[in-house]
Image (cartoon, rainbow, N blue to C red; front, side, top):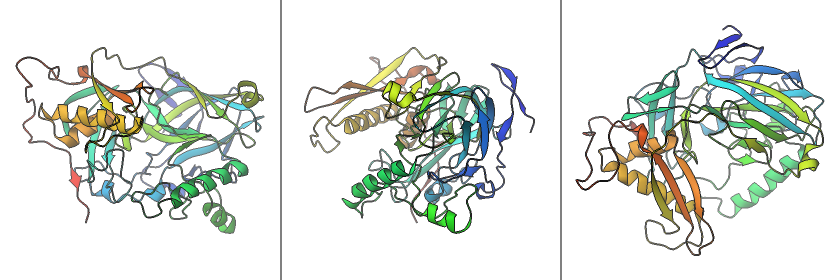
Length: 421
């Protein structure tokens, strides 16, 4: 593959520091890792002010195929994820600094112009709406320039806002120990819960980059999983971190140790489907610089971000409200998670009136540029969350009217599902 990438917006040449072979296991690539640990070796060093290109696997490392069978989502080996490209060191970056990462551009690999969205089985990962959707499902999305559509979800088409779902820096020893201690304490409050309250260190399928032998095994046994966002950034899934965005990451180790991956072509706020957004293999063009002593200067505990100036232009929305009362009419106290769940379920139920299956409605919420808002957090006992569904993405008219809804789909096309064996 050439080092020069052509996009509709720009033409540039930059060094490609990390490449991926989608036909080979990520475990054959020493510039890939799937755990957080301070001893994972830096694979490339750059200078402050440098820009470069990084290729990345989809987050599962090519476990999911472009077909109409959801069994691969049901059976996905979650201890493998996420596969990240890096760590990349920036010369001169020291603990206490802020690493400034400008996302100059991002896109799907030329050799992989498609992506997938899925819902995990409740017995293997689950998800945000797992009680309502306990069965694995998968939809495939094809890319046509800046737009995407799916053979499994007819009647919708939208512009992508491509972004890395996971990007961050290596932790130091103190931070790693703090993560493991607090997450183990939470796990122990209900150790038999399915899905688990936290994903603890697990050596199964751990890939520690260049580490080998006993050192690799010891680090894998205590390395943090990449599932949640943490103080180093990580799996934040912020859909507005697209072309032109800037990230400010705390540095905890020499060089910072920048890694990235889990790229989405498009995603709704909250990554509602968990196997979220439209997952894809990607390339990312980034530029790095340093703010010396930035953590102390700005009082930084968690990363900060400047969003992309480029967003899909959708002006018409239908807004669905949810409150802290679950589907069994149980009252919760100012529970924003429950309120957002209810807003999502209200939107899904509404879309079924126009011929979409519940599974298709869920896929739309996970992949379309829906907005999630904290609309009310002080009026106890109910929090109020809202989900903004862009109506322009639909071929048909989904606005309510006096004549009632028109069923645009006849049910002959649906999303592949895979019941548990």
